Length: 436
Image 1 (cartoon, one colour):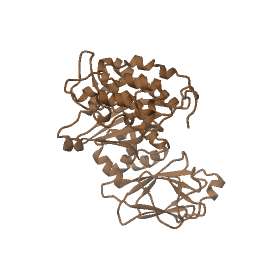
Image 2 (cartoon, rainbow, N blue to C red):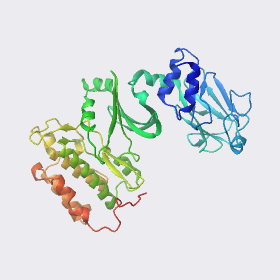
Image 3 (tube, rainbow, N blue to C red):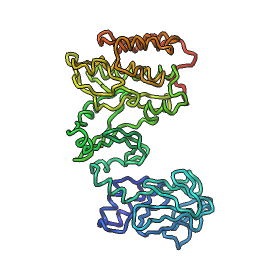
Image 4 (spheres, rainbow, N blue to C red):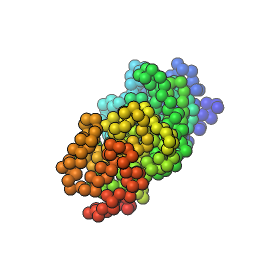
């Protein structure tokens, strides 16, 4: 592609993706002067701005590095009048990756929705959105080349042909970080990207965990209450797992945002019933999850339904036939069924115990026990004062938390438990009621 073709193609991509930036980088040697790019966020208006000088100015006068023109940029007179002679200045400090933006205007400059002070340098991080005059007038998104070069050097190259990765971190664990992203063809098509550091796993575990197993388990599952995996990319150092984005984050995060730290019983019924339906589907497909907990339940809000609960993180999951057992104690200890660490094997019934622990966490904001569970511990739990006025909750918990896995409720019995049909003072949120 010629340089002229490149310049004519880039402005039509709103917003630009990392793959677009890769094209820019490929047109220049590694030691060229380009240190950043401002990509336009409004169709048929602004141009892509390739940054090469250490100080770059933007305004409506021709002596600026980049001039806004009412005719060329098809701006309404009111919008053009709100642009100052020099509206803002972007500066790179001493050939480093540190970049600042300074407002020089009468009507204000905004970075990621925040109005920045006039005549004072303000940090401009990678992927920042710049607005002029009002927050909704989003003009550019800033791409820092130093950050991009580091990212390109480590990530599977094919990933950026299809997706753009944002800076926002959705979650972080011992082996992986989950970030928000979007599909290059449509920035409104948001995704969650699980980035697995294989080198970190090798250093900590002495071996490499097979994350492709997680993908193979979930890729063909199609159920509303199970998170969907859309893509998978891998190189020698990293794995990128692209999943559907759950707009409200994890159930644990949702609970922590609530003043009480717990979920109301009507809402708990709605969430928990959906989780049971997801587990039922897994078990019908001979899959044991092995790490059911509040962190691994995601919540998505749809326009027509308040919330959809989705089971995620299948890194510990396995295909398990009715005649087979698992032996390795994996998952989260506070949710473990007693048999998981017994050395004698366990079945899908272990997930039912974990569901009981999850239900207790949802209602009371803490795990049901501190020490290793036994008959005495569970009997003491059933005498908890918080369950005194909740006989159906107590009965359901008792059905899940049986020391003998064969005596536990089946998933079908749990779904049809009387607790879900108890008369409520508040309408069940699943019935098209919006929950704030």
